Image 1 (tube, one colour):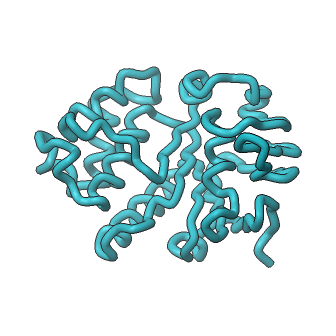
Image 2 (cartoon, rainbow, N blue to C red; image 1 turned 180 degrees about the horizontal axis):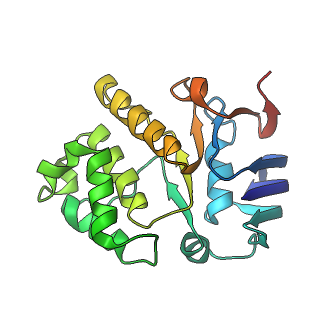
Amino acid sequence: MLTVEGLNAWWGHAQALFDVSLQVGEGELVVLQGLNGAGKSTLLQSLIGIGPRVQGRIVWDGQAIQAWPAHRRARAGLGFVAEDRRLFTSLSVQDNLWIAAQTEGQGSLAARLQRVLALFPQLEPMLQRPASQMSGGEQQMLALARTLMTGPRLLLLDEPCEGIAPVLVAAMRDALLQLAQEGVTMLVAEQNNILADRADRVLVLASGRLGLLP
């Protein structure tokens, strides 16, 4: 489904990724581990088409997309959940979800909403609440739910369990494992071993270079 060949990335003159190559097959859960500054966020941002200057080849569903803008990649089925969540905090939970739903995703809008509320039942009583009045963990759930409303075929998640309460970490892990069980393809960047024990593969980034966990 996704193939990356010889990817290099720069922030200004500083190189952050060095000749990264990887593949993610349909239905796989691939975990990308590494310390802060290893290049995990840079890699995900490079795949979705925001942030760094890149060189290399990114092939999505048989098409080279490295020259595509981010919105075209999103329309093609790549969904990105950033570490900083990027919610519309002045809008309600429901409005955040409906704005994301105005896309050509898979399934009807009502079916997508029903699905995300089944995954994250904590959000249903908050539908009229401004996103600014949610905890960090609740906002993280909303960020993932909002991306799911676009009907993505591949989820790119940047530290989905970082900095949230342990009870919500457990809920997030359960939701991600449920998605994996349903066959949703995911590339998840994380520092901790939240999902590594259930991943199809674990890749390790160190100083912008990719390795494979033995």
